Image 1: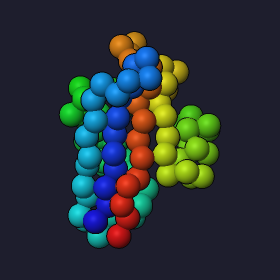
Image 2: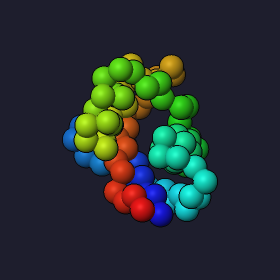
Image 3: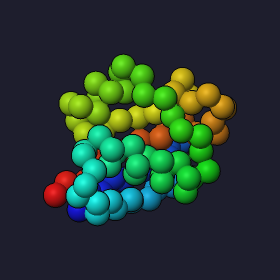
Image 4: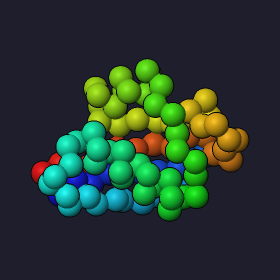
Length: 89
């Protein structure tokens, strides 16, 4: 079971959150992250964020990444979207 927690923050307050569970052992970790992020964006009605070098590095080091306005093509009405791996198995 792979679980990714997605949260939207504005002014240091969490506005929305969701947890996505992926139970497909045929996918590698990277594909699970991308699939879960797609589902988070669909649930929050967001465009897919762009993975910048800093975002990738943070995710590799901490299993957590923040997507700010520079990661999105369209304007966003929040400060950042944060994703965090909460279970890998």
